Amino acid sequence: MSEKEPEQHLAQRVVDAMMAKDAFSQWLGVKILEVSPRQATISMRVRTEMVNGFGVAHGAIAYALADSALAFASNTHGRVTVSIENSITYPQPVHVGDELVAAAEEESASNRLGYYRVTVKRKDGVIVALFRGTVYKTKADFFSPMSASEE
Image 1 (cartoon, rainbow, N blue to C red):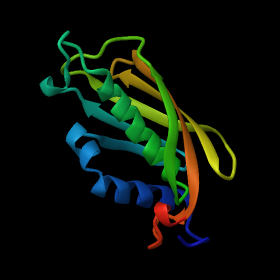
Image 2: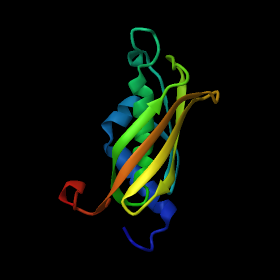
Image 3: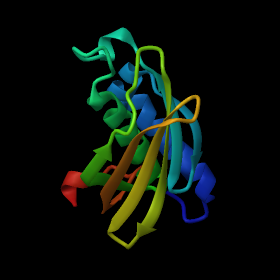
Image 4: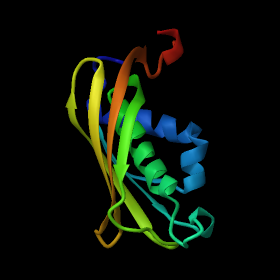
């Protein structure tokens, strides 16, 4: 990463590189709607194979979407960042055919930790999940050959 590289360009470049290798987000059907430094908004449509025995989307679906949004948002600054603690609340059920939109944004950060809020809504604006995530920022540059495990 160049120190001269504008933040927005870096954020988009990081998310594009992550999404290209993220087989799980691809399986979910994630679409990147908006990316900016320390923020990301993504969407997906709930499919039949994503529901549980009660006919509603398995909680892991909203969680996975929120987790993907967190990953994209928290890495936009160009350092490899990993999740260390997350929690989620499900105020409304999700059904087959629902289009979900997850918006992640940084609420606070230090040099090594970041705190994020992710709101997952149906396309009609109803909140279906509230997710909080804490991330650890490694020393590794996202585009360097050094991996987070080498830190």
